[in-house]
Image (tube, rainbow, N blue to C red; front, side):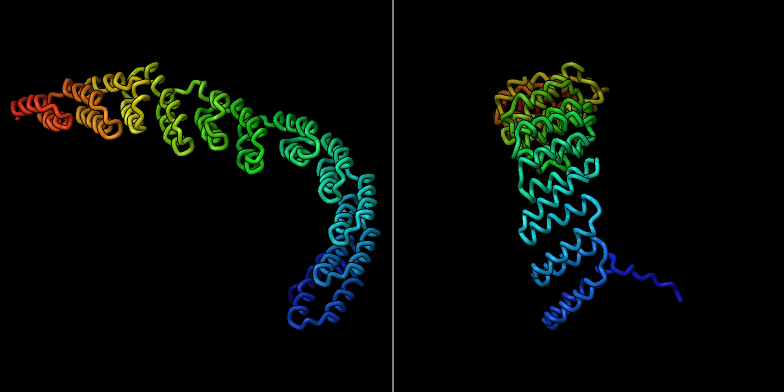
Length: 402
């Protein structure tokens, strides 16, 4: 027969094994006397602070018997050995019996024997503030707790608690919190786990983002921050956005990706335009490199699809279209080049309704055309622009090649 391990008599596990019995008896029979008998039997054997408190909680929640609850809490005081247990008892005196006087006495005893570490001091300070509601005493304890804070998580708990009762102390603790953020990974954890708190405290959130910008070293991280900032602040805080927008970012594909993403975040398209401008500037600086040609074509198409005629003029998009379409065939496959030209032409007609610009693009396509299928397409392009003479000219070129 296998060995069976029984719970030690009077321990917390022993009490928990029977916790469902009183509730079930009450549910199935509503026999209060029977329930009391079960609890009395358990009371006679509990002999640790934790087990007494657990039994007290069950009796209070099941029977709402304050006299019995008080007797058990007083018993737990005699069995308590450390500050954590005294804090737990004090909290119950307030929450269950509304006895602040007894709770305060126990909290003072806890302070006298509290362990010299952050967790113990913080637990006491937090209870004094939120359970006992003694702000003056709590501030004194938070100042002591600060001495034991070691990392961002510790400082987060401190300044978050103290925020509404002492602005100066909160600022001091928040400053130390920012100093504790050493890497961008720390920032990612903050923006992942604590964003709900910071989203309701925009003043502090802005400082977190400023720290994030300072620590970000990768372009993708910087652009992700840009979207996050726009999500919580919109595009009204240009100074904060410019801390990223003024950074040197040359990856055309990445700038294009985040420009498109930003349209959903920033409905005024401010960020999209700024990122598109950075991408165009990068193209000018780098030149029209072979590996970038298709990405440049997609970028120009995206800019046109914004449907902003003034912006298209501002960035002189015709310059980029001309450079792109004049690339030699060995750099840019002819079929792809013509298709790109046609796509840009169609996009201009649809999104900008700018016949003048469309005509210029059409002529660029014509200047770089040599095959019959190219001229046949150009017949249609010119007809869409209501230039029948040019359409007829394209048709004549087409006939000579077929």
